[in-house]
Length: 196
Image (cartoon, rainbow, N blue to C red):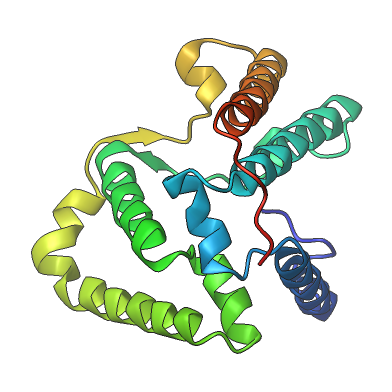
């Protein structure tokens, strides 16, 4: 990711702190410090996580596309990680299992821990144990897996043969379909929003 200000500037640290505080405040305001609300998407009683995720992702994708078209920020200047298929699938499964059982993702657990939720502190303890396990077993177990199935720096549009604009448009349509689907499910099964 490109810095907000000149590389190496201390202003970047202040900007990061302020953005982090704002992000935490927004998560808390949206109820994302509640493990019940977050896990609700997996158990079928709360779909706010899906709507927030897709809204954020579409906004970011459309914003990057517009900035790129205006010549204010080029895709080539935005840092993007290298894609590894098998490690991504394994990491996704581990995170998914943790999300379903613990009710948090790593970011929301920090938000909830910051306001003193005990379950979030326990979840963060599990994250630390996982980090230590990964670190101590990296060479013997994870290193060969970590460096396998490398695709390089690719975007979904590249993989399915769409231009950047069409890929963002397709993603927008998928998000709108998801919104319609969860609203249809809520109406069909008379699912009411739960306050936390």
